[in-house]
Amino acid sequence: MSDAILAVMEQQEGKLNRMSWEALAAAQRIGDELSKPVEALVLGEGVRAIADEVAASKLACVRLLEDPLLKEYTPDAYCLALREIIAAEKPYLVLLPHTYQVRDFAPKLASGIERSFLSDCIGYRVEDGSLVFTRQLFQGKMNADISFTGDPPYFVSVQAGSFRADQVATGGQPAAVESFSSKIESGKVRTQPLEKFQEAKRTVDLTQAEIIVAAGRGIKEQENLALIQKLADALGAEVGGSRPICDNGWLPMERQIGSSGQTVAPKLYLALGISGAIQHLVGMKGARTIVAVNKDQNAPIFEVADYGIVGNLFDVVPALIEEINKAKGQ
Amino acid sequence: MKIMVCIKQVPAKDSTLRLTEDSTWIREQDLSYEINEPDAYALEEALRLKEKHGGEVVVCSVGPDRVQQVIREALAKGADRAIHLVADGGSRLDSYPAARLMAEAVRREGFDLICTGLQSDDLGFAQTGVVLAELLGLPHATIIMEVQAEDGRLKVKRELEGGWFQWVQMPLPALLTIQSGINKLRYATLKGIKQAKSKEIRRVIATELGLKAEELAGRQKLHRVYVPVKTKQTEFIDGSPKEAAAKLVEKLQRDARVL
Image 1 (tube, helix red, strand yellow):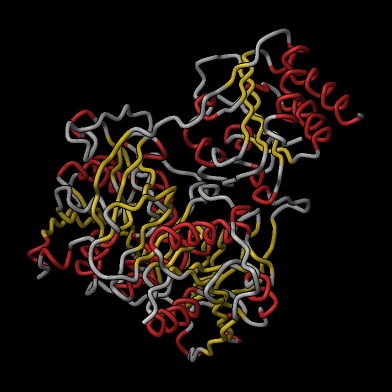
Image 2 (spheres, one colour; image 1 turned 30 degrees about the horizontal axis):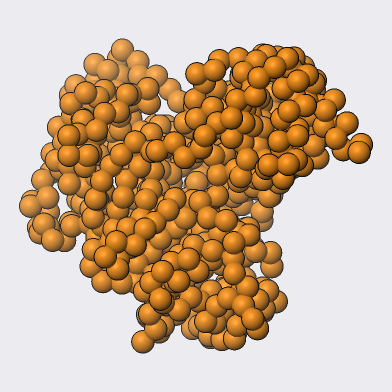
């Protein structure tokens, strides 16, 4: 019987979701502390190359689950396949990134085998040999420490930015890739995925951006976004916005950061004229370094900022553009 | 179409939350409540589907007597009747007990479609709808931004990450979790508020459903609730805009190493 910590790596069209590495980093840390083997799981069709990529990490093994019915994601096929491998391998803990896809299938996966799924966790600790997880309540206004009762396997998803992808330990030699053939009956897959599409022509994936410059109500008028764009250009950054900016139509919805938009964890996040409502903070506080510029020194954005400048963004931003260009010119 | 909408009553958005003395929950007596925002959109979508295809909209809510406030609002907006699953606290930890109660209460109703919000603003597990679908043996799709119903089938627009969407088809009956912003919410009319008073609210307690306490027990234990500790020490940078900008760029290069 395996007693492993199993990290489920999410891939779409042959590309790993960056948050998968964060789940793997969490799995490695927990495995270390509990002295349990750590395994990664890759599922899909024709995804051997991804399994090999993951195998460079320090792992007991990579489990590769391939089936034509896993080529396109459906909650039914994913749950059928995962239940088979979980029944066979009996992991102690299944760790998943808290992505839209995981939200779609993990509650079904866990409840279907009468197990509990603790979603959107931001941390953990080991207390008397058992795991206690921390997750947010009331949109980040409170935290709660929660543990599982009953038997494993336990299911946990981790919030974007709660663990660091760059802290995944690599192994001395590649981990073994163990293929697992599933037996999904096509008649049991009830949903039929059709085409994927984007609403607007020009699109962006802010979750993959390394630097984000975000504007809030403080920019006052749509024309002033040009200044924000100029700063973004100087930094090689993407532009994002808080909900009011996107609701006004000043920025496309795909650039909205927060609980109803994107959750991002870039290396650098500049919040300009954003007061920092909790709905915004939950979407960006996982950023490595946060800079806030705001007129109000009591604005909640400064609660999460590493660096703060209290002042008018229309004075600070042009100066910042100049200094960045100067620094880059060196 | 016979449609059920699951609605949850949550603390109002601007609430100041205070902890109970033993730090195991918040002081509920201080709070005012409102309908969970995504659930309001789920209700609106159901009402629109009924207007288009005919049928019935039934709202279902789990919680103590105070949840009748959001039930009344839903009835005033146009829902036909309601089911109130009476549960005092207890179920606030795990999505499973709430889903289990609803599943047993509506199993024999034969709904064509069940709509829920994609997550709650209080606990935010984002699970109740999907667990309910599993318990009822229904196909589901989450984070839905458009619903088309035709010939016993659904075609829905699922929101993916990074600005992508996907059309998904499935047979009815089915369950959908609805994203905020899918439609424009209506207000209750005076006539609606008046009519709501005579609409049926079926009050159901767990034991009437033949459920034992252990069947409703969550599989999680809450140890403590607390105000998050600020982990970051903000370094404020002073000086004129030019000075502050220069200092900031230097810090981002030297200390944070992000430029």
